[in-house]
Length: 227
Ligand SMILES: [Zn+2]
Image (cartoon, rainbow, N blue to C red; front, side, top):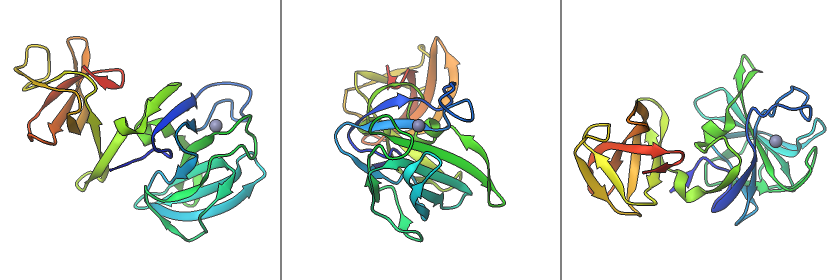
């Protein structure tokens, strides 16, 4: 099991991607700020190669820049207190790249996660880093156990995400409250096959597959949990 989040266990999102304000030269927050609550180990959030590992005077402090495999995206993990990786090193989701810190332009210990899309060797835009990690782009406390990924869908080269039901949840044969329902208990793990299939009956419906029974169906999403 692995996640695309830089912390294991519980973590706090203290500033979302895209927040507007004078604090940032660009006028908005170009990444997502996370605080590890159970551990200060900072993990890579992709498979890739370390391109930079050192101190940045522009505000990142001690940071690591990783080139994602199979894309031109660059991942920045900033404000580290310690760096454990070297330029040229291959990293995966399970590589600890450093320790959370407050170096550079930081008011407290946290990790600034930023994703930049590159074209011809230069950054052309900052991507939504919360979406990239598969977490809500919203201040709050979360548990990385809710955002597990299990593998790669080779046809689309996207990560398969898993969720664990926190409450009794119906997997329905068709999306919508009138679909034939099969009740699953809390603790059931599902692969998310497709998100946002349809918005119906007041819910967003995701297509999922139960890991244990193999049943494929649709579940209603409420915020980050399934109903
Ligand atoms: Zn930040």
